[in-house]
Length: 127
Image: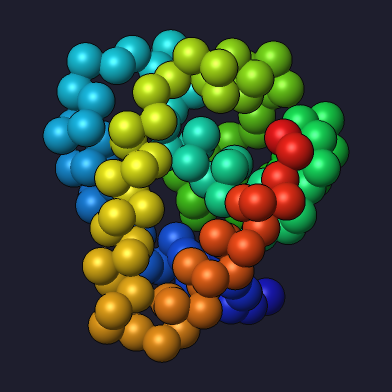
């Protein structure tokens, strides 16, 4: 059964095609080596929204939601791959994505609440 939640609302505010445009503009030459920027973004959003405290917990919890991976256009993640991506990928794509979400937030009260929630959790994240 499908249910709407905060994670779904954020993804709905940022369609994949929009994210791919942002990525192409912000980091056109960045190679992903099998772990796409989209998968990276989804895992980090999931981390913030679900208040994960470590990469190990994030990976375990995220991978437990395997039934939703197909619909999100992603797959399981590995802790070492996520750690490498966090340390070596440019943050420009994510900064531009945040700008896009802020611009969308001006059009929707629900989106403002989602961004407030993500922003409040960023200060507490230790991943």
